[in-house]
Image (cartoon, rainbow, N blue to C red; front, side, top):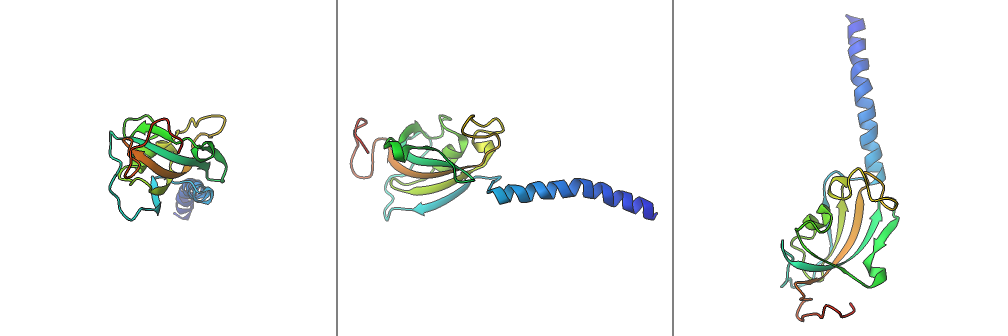
Length: 155
C-alpha cells in the first residue's frame, strides 16, 4: 500500500512540478494570459470615443517584456491609421482600443494568442511573446477632438 502511495505521489509530482515551474517562469518574464488594459491618461471630457468600424489614428511604442522596443510611431512622428475591429491589426489592439477617447493613453499588455501567436514575427518578435504597447489615440474618423485633421498633416 505504501509503495502504491509513493508511486501515485511521484506521478502527480512529475506533472505538477513542471507545470508550476512554467507558470512561475511566465510571470517572472512578465508574460500575461489575458489582455490587460491600463489607462494611463484620460482627458477631462470624452466627446469622441473609438468604436468598432471607426477609422482611428494611434501613436504607439511596442516593447517585449524585457523592455526591448521593437517599433515606435512616436519616434517616426507617424501614427498608424486603421479601421478598428476589422482585423487590420493584431486582435489585442482591436480589443484594447475599443472605447478609448481621443487623447487617451493606454498601456496594453497583449498575450501571444492576441498578438503574433506561437510563430511570432521574426526577427524582432519571438514566438509566444507577450507584447506591451504604450498607445495614444490621436483621432477618430479624422476628428482629433474639436477640429478635423488633414490626412497629410504632421502630428
